[in-house]
Length: 145
Image 1 (tube, one colour):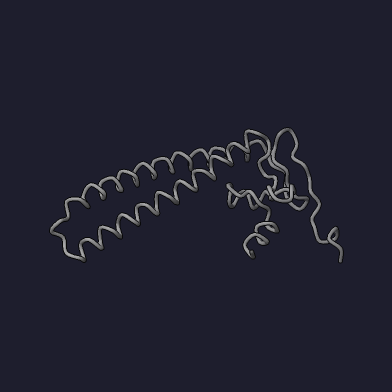
Image 2 (image 1 turned 120 degrees about the vertical axis):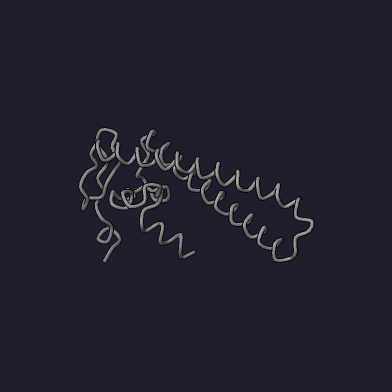
């Protein structure tokens, strides 16, 4: 079997809609608007999560200076809570960056195109994970490395 026989035919998006694979239904303007609304909602939620986490971190840092009489267990708990809040904030920042990137690609007309091979990411993949920038083949190849 040759590579041409294995790969699915690709269909370019029409009228500014994202591209899709031949075995998928074409994107509709309503689906793209729904996807954009979902991404914008995610961005707003992530902004709130980051603000909340940063407030929590600031509170924990302020309280850490007052712990002169704390025993080792109290100090360890405060460190754990601070690290946990920092991890949540960093994860939210990364997801926000991916979400904003997806919104920018949607606005630029490059949404749904694999950043590695240039083929469509796939409508069903994007509906499941709207921040995807790689098609399944490229993503699997990346994860194997």
